[in-house]
Amino acid sequence: MIGRVTKKELFSCILRAHGIKGQELIKMGYEALLQDECNIVLYDGVVETLEKLKKLRYRIGIITDTISATEEKLRWFKSKGLTIEWDAFSNSAETDVRKPHATAYQSALSQAGVSAEESIFVGHTAVELEGARAIGMTTVAFCPDPGARATYHCAHFTELLKMPFIRQDTSS
Image 1 (cartoon, rainbow, N blue to C red):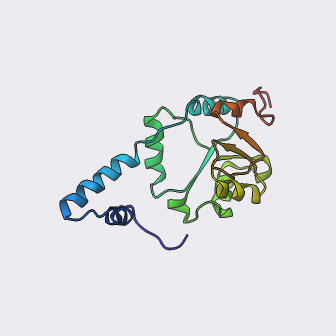
Image 2 (tube, rainbow, N blue to C red):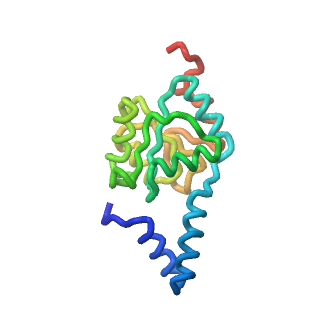
Image 3 (cartoon, one colour):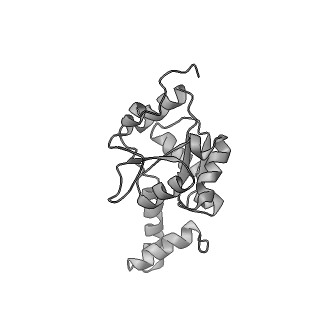
């Protein structure tokens, strides 16, 4: 990470870059950005797939590049029905590193108590998938950006449940 910026500073830069001037307009713009930030949309099948993976006793984590605190992001997820208990949450706002830095991935692996070799990373950008692959994680490209390479690909999130590395029983 190069430097450290607060959410307010980032939003101020965005507003200035768009030519927003005047204290009242800046205040309105800041409030609009705050509202927009938490207006997340989950892909179809995400909630059901992650709930099923938890029932199958998989450890589930997030590696996120964000300026928002973990608690804030968890509130957003909960508001969309995603209420699973996370085993790991690597947040760049708290770790001071962003993907593809190895520490971003290793933080989540450590929290979950697993090695890179026994983990799956699901992502969409070439750089984040390459970072995961570089430390030994199996990669799945979900709705990938052009040029993103991964071990596996899926167009719908529920396809993860049909991947060859997913065991379908809870006995092991």
